[in-house]
Every structure is written in C-alpha cells, then in structure tokens.
Image 1 (cartoon, rainbow, N blue to C red):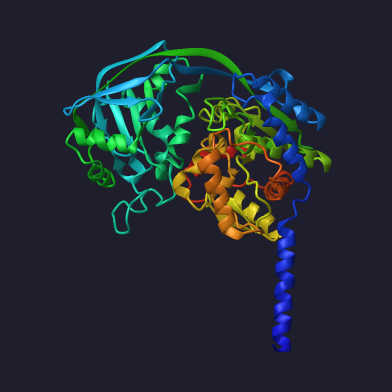
Image 2 (image 1 turned 120 degrees about the horizontal axis):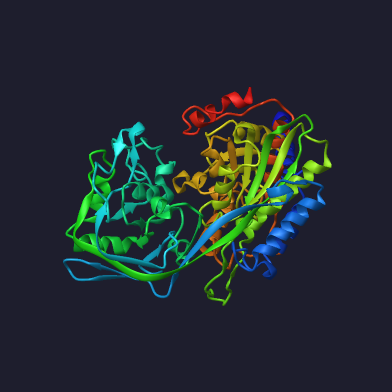
Length: 556
C-alpha cells in the first residue's frame, strides 16, 4: 500500500473513531439517572400509572418532588404543581357481544377477538337495534384536496364502516390518488380519531374501523389493550361530540361481512382510492348491540413546573412527556398483570426531569422553560389536550415544544430518528446539535404509521405551536453496535411483544446512552432557542403554518 493510501486510511480511521466517540457523548444528560427514574416509575408501587388508578397519586407526588428538588417553580393551579384535568371514565360492564344480521345468517362479533368496541359517552347502557351499516371508504372529507368520500350520504342512526389510513396509503405508482395525501406519509385524515370525529359530525350512531396493521401502525394486541375502557375530558354535551359506539373489527371479519352482503372487500378497497368513490350500503346487514356501561367522573392531573426566564419570562419553551400507562390488566403468558410502561413513557418523564436538571445547573435562560408531565395520553392525548385548551403559558408565545415518547434502550447511535420530518424549523436546530455530536438526522422510516399524530405534542401542534417529537418507534436507529439492522430489530421486538403490554418493564440490561444522547440534543437545541430572539415556524406545506400565523401579532 502506498504512503498516500496509508495516510488516507489512517485519516479515515481517526475520523470514524472521533465520530463514534462523539456519538456516545450525552453531555449533561446522565444515562444512569434516566435509568433510575424509569426503574422507579415502572416499579410495583406505581401499579402501571393508570389515570384514576392506585398508582396515580404516588406518580404525581414523585414527579412533583423531583421538580421541587431541582428548585423549579410550581406552574399548576393556584400556585401548585398540578393542573386538574376533569375526566370521565367509561367501561363495558359485563359481556359485550355484537350481532350482525346478514342475508347469509347472523354473524357474532366477540369482544376482544373479532371486535373491540367502547363508548365515550357517560351512559348506563349501549343499545343499538338493527342499525344499517354503510361502508364509507377512508371516510375523508378534504375539500382542499378535492376529496369527499361521503358524497352527501345520510349516516343518521347508522354504523359507519371505515378503512384505516388515508386514500393513497397503498396506492400504486400511476394511480391518480398517489401522493395526493402525502404518499406513504400519513396525514391526520389517516387517524382513527379523525374518522370518529367525522362520523359524529355526520350523525352516525356508531363506527367500526377495519383493522390492518399497515394503516394502524400496530397489531391487534394493541387494539385489545383498552379492554373496553375509555376516557374523555368532561364535556357539556357528550352526545354532540362522541359516538354511542366506536371501535374496530378484524380484517378477516370485515371480509366475511362484506361477502355476506354480496360485496368484495378488496374490490371496494381499491375503489376507495378514487375520488369517484361513493358510500356503499351493506345490503341486508344490520348491527345490534345491548350491553351495560359503568362510568364515573374523575379528576386526574398534569404535573407542571417552570424555570422563569431571566429576560423574557412570558415566552416559553416546553419539554414534555406523559406519565400515564395502562395500569393493571389481564395476565400475560407469564401471569404478569401490571402494564408498567417503562419505555412508554416512564423513560420520557425521566428525560423531562433530566432536561430540567441540566437547565437548573446552568445560567438562567432568557426565556422561560416549562416542564410538563401529561396525564391520559394513552386514552387519547387528553392531558395535553386539556392543557392546550387551558394553557398556563400563552400558546402564541410558546416558542417550541419538545416531546419524549418511547426512547430507545439499546445504546449509542450514529443518528437520531425524527418523526414528522419536514414539518418545521425545530428539526434544523436538532440537526445542528446532532452534527456537534458527530451524528445525523434520519427521517421516520415508516411515516404511514402516523406517529406524528399519535403523541402529546400534537395537541399543541394543532394550535400552531412548533413541535418536535423524539420517539424510538419511528424506525431503527443506526446503532454503534449492530448498525441499522440492530436498531430495526429492537423496534420490531418491542412493538410486537411489549408495546402496551406487561413486557414493557425496566431492565438492568438496558443501555440508555443512546436515549441520553437524544435528550441532550433537545436540551441543547431548546437552550439555544431560550437564549435567542428566534421564533421557529412551520415549513411551507405544513397544515399548521396558517394556524401559527393567526397569533403572529403576539410575537412582535
């Protein structure tokens, strides 16, 4: 080998070594502290941290003590650490078997196996008698995209049957719809929350979404995790905002149901990818349901703390995660019943606390920093939604929101996976900080899963606040040990076995150096914003840019 070649090789090895070393540097964020806090919140004492469950009070007290010990100010109601969130909890009381009468005979939908339904109305009973079923495709009404799946159909008193996802999720190249809804990157029209909202607006009594893992972003075990239990914020008129019955049916059940009505599921699914699609009644099919519901009003709480800004205290950068998990449920194969939510999202709360510690150890930032632990994320982003309706810091002067939800637990990485790439300028600041760590930004590998719309930051995004989500489920990181293949394997294993299951428990085998890297990125990016006069904005094409513009006068 020539001298020049040897020098080039040595130079490359030095650069690679420097990059690897930088990629393991988490600066002021301590992996051991992340681990200790996560282990505590995922322990038996917190009983799975269900809102209203036995673990709620110790969870709120623990987080409040952590904030107080750091010298932060309480930012909740009446000078306290908490913001009351009035919720209603509903649960199917007893067996819930749905029956669909068809021309080919009755079809029974067993709860948890063929279907999974609930109600978010505080009623004593759900009784539906022979309600007609109407297939409404993807259920999208998007005039800005010249798309209307409903075509004026009357859904009053009927059951709407939806596909999950949006119309170009599975479009082949050349199909007219391809790219009309962002290609494989899901829009809000893809989300089940949107579909239920649209069904209510159109007078439906209920809605069933056909479960397919590609569009849902998770398997049937995740759908079943609710066990017929639901939460909502307290509403003046629940019937105006919520369906009497909402839920999912297995794909093979839908195929059978369509066949019994003389319809072919796949043919209609292809038809739903065209703007000419019209709703199709399932001829001869009607759904009946009759089951009891228990319901109770309950108060849960967000935990809020503040580090006041030295020069611009009315301008705020937010760091947030959700404290809740799924509590106690049915035993798994090993007999475990506590769904501990260690990665989802005790580690996110640990990240918020660690970011707070880092800020309190340095000079006071010019802008205020708000640290939030939301309740009831797993029940529909309810704690963050309540805050967005009752903010303790004006949203027009909220500079940015950084949200942590499921950080990866398998070590340092050469990159950070960004969910919702292309949305706003916060990712530019993240990329700059990543470069200082010797790392790069990798966009979400599977944007069709709509992760950007599935975490608490979305409650602020839909009010125009620029947001950035760090979520390990956005795709496998390029790990120092094992590369992208190892990162993908971790995501696949976690989502298939542990997501919302008792398996999501703290482990001494975790390597949280990679998680600490990611927290450090947002800490540095947020610190730079907190000591600047910058107002990051949404990028052209984002559905949130116009919303942010409505409050521009507040930032002058």
